[in-house]
Length: 439
Ligand SMILES: [Zn+2]
Image (tube, rainbow, N blue to C red; front, side, top):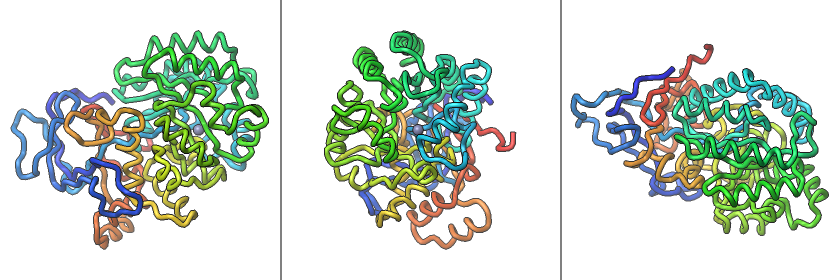
């Protein structure tokens, strides 16, 4: 699947990205940048500029003509579990049962190197096939699963943050380890992978109930010791889970406070879900510069709750979008955006295509402290690009033909589209054309 690296590449199409966050409800935001029929110029893996379609670059540029199609920054999925592709679309449970019934057995298989390597390759190829070029991912507790995922991401040139899952209680014996061993393995993995190519280590606490206070303290030490590492975990996804956390950590003011007390709340913290929070929690998140990885598909599928996006926005909390596969039912960020819209509709709110698209690109990049690297088509950024058909099939094409505004077109794209709409994926200026869907 490796394409030759071309040092100078020009892509012609309708360029769409953001220069600022769109306001809630605004269908014509100032920060939206739409440049129909332009060449996007990429040199040595980075965007160097753009020019109108009738001014083609010279013959020393490898030119790709995508006229009539959208060229967007690659999507950033800020919360997804690589081994859980094996349990996507599993019937019949809420969060805590779902973990025990479906997730833990699937993750246990990743102790085996061959399964970990195959699974990592399948997962990353599937992300690319859905137009996702960067991810913040959970492999498993097994060190080999982390090595396998980082190796596979490096082979594809992808930006990826991941880390060994930390669990030392309330999980099957084959998925827990002790504080000392976990600290040693995490330190080895950080030394091996953090900052290599486009890879970053994320100290990965599954969630508060599966860690002892001692293990959470160790995770906090890792974050304090290693500059630039991320921290990822789950937060306030489900009411039974929140109640359990109150019982396990009675001294903490709230679920979020459990993490804050252990040094796990900062601007590189990625908290999945964050549905059942209060104002004090949101103020703490905003104050720390931490982000919520909103996972609408998973929240609907597991019946977890309806995320209050506006309350987070009003409190100044960064909100990114995430598939949360296997709780989520699709790796497609289009399907994820469509589900996010439906959650807001159930809350009596309206999510514009722009707020959703921004959260999956520039918003996520900024929340990850990577705003100058990914998530936009700005000169200087890494050329992670996806080319999209706005409409595929007679129903979507008819709808697109009748759309009267750019927002109407893009809203229909996000609502009706999926991986079939993806034409090409480019990662750091290299074409990584997705594998055939039935391969
Ligand atoms: Zn998750």
